[in-house]
Length: 290
Image: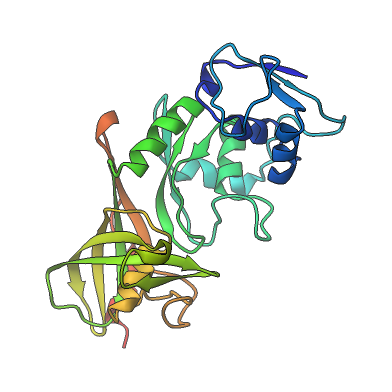
């Protein structure tokens, strides 16, 4: 089976190209295929990290039955409505969606499909790829690239902290400082993220800026700006300060059915994009509760 590399896959690693083309083969199988020479570039063996160039020929020897192109899922009428209503910005390069709380980003962990598969099916575009993620119980804006070229460019901007991300948050407790910054070192351990005193043992710096918007009876509404994008960053940092997010079962209290963490604004200066959403109406309810 031969593939001629077009501009979309120019610069993509060989192992990642094969993962996209053969969704039914696990990553270990992809590596075995490359190692045994059953996937070659221009007739030569290459390492998994080899970056493909336009007009390269990738020849692959696989048994029949492997899925070459991932099939798009069939959407229910409710999922079509969800997809249509979630889109808040779209251009030729990207799409920004407002993800509801309770919906996962992609298939896996007991979920047949998530927002990624829904939007791929709705747009009839299997190349659509979200370049950053938010947790299942977090709601709000997420950015998707519509082509592989756009995905590489926007992902690089995410890594370079050139895309601004802002959140609305309701936390337990009263915060009196109008503005504050939290800098800490975070590391994922097992299924949680923990704070470390320094960058040793693989911990990475995390920085967030916060502004107090409204003070309620026992809770505070904040706006946060992320300067880094560590897993569970806002959740861990605020919990460590004694202000866990309302509805955060992992790092806070088992209270209610919703986590009050909302991705409300994305700024992409290179594309002249600044998309923002107002504070959700239900974010004010916890502020008046005892």
